Image 1 (cartoon, one colour):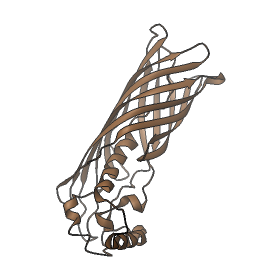
Image 2 (cartoon, one colour):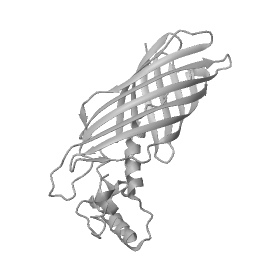
Image 3 (cartoon, one colour):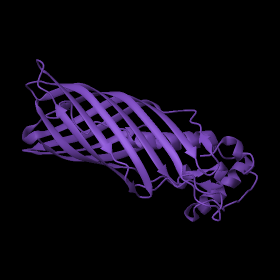
Image 4 (spheres, one colour):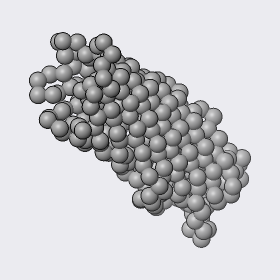
Length: 281
């Protein structure tokens, strides 16, 4: 994730593996050969844009609940566990295959969340929630992540429910991500910031025993900033994510216990799973 101008001085170094993770040696060697003979469709800017978008979308606050998240006039305290799938060599390699970035630090994002459903306004149940990850160093990264959501849900006598939701997330990370060019170079901390906001339409249906399958479709916009400590370069995202997102999940309320799990995707960027465990207050 380095300025494209730096690529001009490195792509000529065919089979340069000094800055490549040993697990990616074979892939990097082939990629450099393909770039040299013109048979590769590798694009440095696209690679950079993907990496910048990936972590913004991996941390955005998806619903993890149906259209009416809690009974009217009640709240819940929850812990979300969001999987962050590790990236393969094809996504970690930059600078024409001469360097890998250390993106696979944290396999999971633990995020405490609070959610409160207000009293009904007619048949409408408004709600609001917040998620917060404090600046604790975990997996070699120090993160601060704040997310908010607000919306409403309407439930019919048949159990069908629908609603709308607005959400926004801001995350900041300090870690050594853009690895040194060679093993002899010192490690330098980098600074990454990603922000997202969007809207979701949610439909669900409550069956017996508190089971609620649900589906959400929305639109999310992302913005990113990445400062590389090695050479004081700011990574430029020329294609910030601004497109559709989707969730397919199941919420289960049993007495005071509230559980949820969902498949979440920002197509072309991330496909992942998330679970939530909470207690209704």
